[in-house]
Length: 102
Image 1 (tube, rainbow, N blue to C red):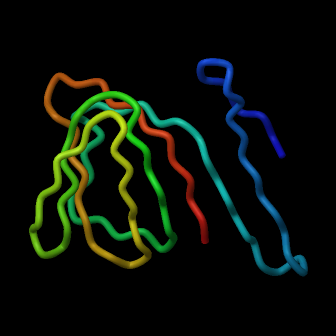
Image 2: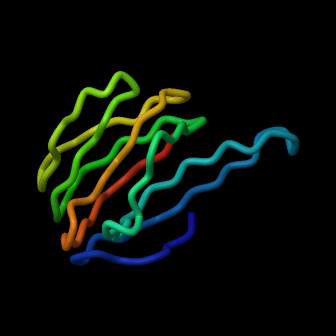
Image 3: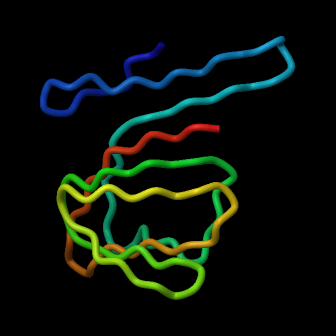
């Protein structure tokens, strides 16, 4: 386990586990700082991601076009292979705590 940073005295760690020397099982967690420039449109992850918004406001949009407003304290999930978009509001500083699982 590698310590990669700290936020308000909370250690942020990244774990990588090798299984049978052929398969890589990656679990990652940490903080991401974003602005409008980091908006992602119609993306698809190959893994699960759980996200807790700590600061800022934005929108999560499903593949069907359903729009969900996000702000501090909101938790949202990105499921594998599901198309979605995330947009940070203009002039906002977004901070998220995330965990990615294979």
